[in-house]
Image (cartoon, rainbow, N blue to C red; front, side, top):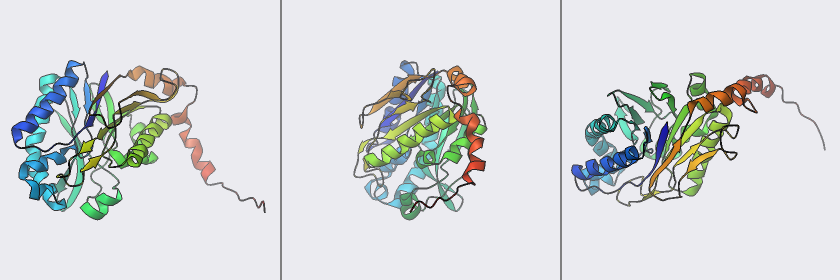
Length: 293
């Protein structure tokens, strides 16, 4: 399959038509290049708050409430675009009210009208302390016509056991939508995505928010780029970097991904990280101390 992953700039929107035009153009551009799976970044939906005005978009709760008002219409747009262009779309994630809690949620929209939801599992400090966002529903495996797909939203990619749970459930591709305000944050997520590709012998796909928009709370400054990573083994680049965009430059990054290459390296790679994972457990409980002073 051909994958497109976004370095996506949140922008100030004067009306709904501007958002519809923007998303339609992005999806159309990727579909015209032959992409079948399109990945948008974490908190890309925060720009919807601008549709409710500067006061709403400039505060935590105002942003969450405003995005929530526009999100049903946005989800309908993603569903329509997926069907019109015959593509799978991982939507820009958004803070969503789920009962008494707020979660960070993205959706995977399919060409035949289906949709599945994935909530972020582990919150960063600003999400916990400033936003009051909590871990949501469980990890999901999306069984699609493109294969078995999992999602680790940004910080989740930095926790190996979450990725391992997805791999054990059959995931061959793991999507990593992210939003980071500084280069060190971007680097943490990139390293996490590459580490999961190495140890799980799978393909990981990182999308990023980029650019500045000071009127949008929490996504005022953004650093990153798109990246598609695999295990540094036979059938993949020696660096593990299948494709990577230009830092902070908006646009799509593309790569062709062959599921058979993933299956081959899991079965007969030069190393077998996923197969040998279980050998860690008995050894981490046997740490001994040697006095050398």
